Image (cartoon, rainbow, N blue to C red; front, top):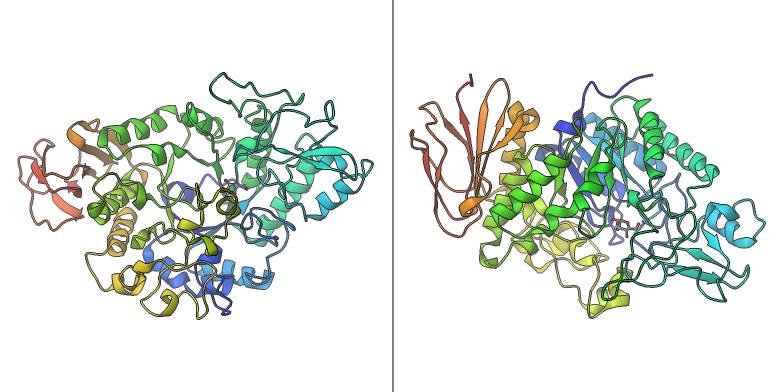
Length: 537
Ligand code: GLC
């Protein structure tokens, strides 16, 4: 049996998250596809990342943008064929890029043959593959609700029972208490590992098991507590150990879990899926940073809590944006006219913290959330909740490659409108501008590669964010690197002690030439600064 502990690329590398619908269209239908991604692999490799994660590309009726899978062993025709996918794997690997697939274990599409069989009769062998319950006093089996607050049971008049769905009713939840479900899913994981994928992002992994007795969730006087019995059950942990064993039977595979749950206890729950750090998932997404206000002390608290809660052998990971919660540039506080300066500071943070960074496509050029006009809304959440919530399309818009028609994404009208800022916010323009966000990302990614302290080193915080300044060091046997982040819109004086004459500026988000030897540094508003000092000892 091979073990994947030798390379640990997933600890030290950077992952680029691609939303396949929106990356690059090659067949002129306005929808991104796999051959389109292949044409952009040079761009991705040139950015300096180490892996790509693709949101689901399996055959799907697309009720939830592919998170409703109808066949786990294929590729949706809108994205291409299995051959295209094999070509993507080969072309990515040839450039030193790994490929991570999305794995949705909690539910399938209602169009999946498993569910069609399950629904056909109470005696069907697949009946128990999903969560069916008889009505209780003529009503829903219990008070569980979906992730967006609606009733989570759907009645099937044919078999006169209800089935459970954590998301849309077109996404029935699987019954993980049935060993056949596990066997079928593990076979699928095996199938993709054999095909050569390098790892998986596990969708809402904390939802897999539900209370065996289907107990009602407690409804408080003021607040509903919807999350007690329909998620976070202990049976998921031994399952993940088996999953890890399967992954470790192949060299150099990885996994990252999405654990989405409202506060409190978010971080504690998230890191619990790492087990002892080497026996469950490799990485977990903790959403806490996403909900942290723009303030150095608040950031320190959130980041430090994640570090403190990690199991001893666990490894952190960070992200700022994704296809559900939107783009970080929109969360950057009051001074929106400083948004690009703040986005750059954010990039310095993401790429210099200890932990694996995940970059959401388009963040590297400063793409924004856009307000989608009603008639173009695609996300079912947006259709259901409009005008209170326009859904998640805002951060799923086409990648902006150049200032040409449809931002170079497609020759046809794209499935979602292109952001209006594309004539300036696009790859081609930013490649030519040294001061662009894109070039900052590239410089940071190159620095991370060059300096082992930045991807392997320890982290020590020199401030807790007081005065809106966050200062930390990354250290290994070779060097000590200081990172200074000014979250404030004013100049700030930072004191880091004598740094010696050999100290050099590795990178600044601003124009900076020199440092004072005494270690007193005047930081510009929203400046991010990376300094290297001489050998330790
Ligand atoms: C995850 C996905 C999201 C999807 C949901 C249901 O949260 O990121 O896009 O709607 O799971 O699969």
